[in-house]
Length: 181
Image (cartoon, rainbow, N blue to C red; front, side):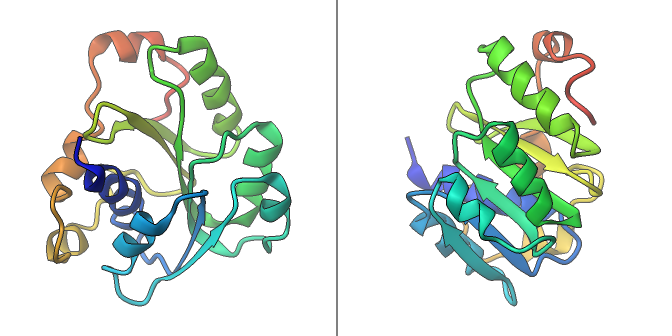
């Protein structure tokens, strides 16, 4: 599987949805590829911290426009992520396969306390991520100019962005009332 697909989708989906992203926090033990993707955007500062609660606790309130996490998060970690996100912030997080319904419903119910919009999306490599947004809808508010003007991308584009949120009816039915779009 092409490794670049994962990092492009984890980074460019939220950065092309937020109106003016300036500060990104990555919570990961292996963020190099995602940092390289963020550097394709101008005027965005990026910080990487370890995937643990102590590192997250040290971050200032309302200091990030986007948080991208690969952390195996629980309700406490998500509360801290909410705390460090600005009022119009976005979260992208990894999660169990959508086939693991109970684990996902539990996670989505926690995230639903913090985000107006909560949607899974296809990463293009057989996995999905969850996008939580306090303000912007990932398909209605996509910044087309930003998504089409990025150079040196191998997978992501504005068409992939919108298409990645398409889900089959069995998923829609299974997560009815939990996915918030």
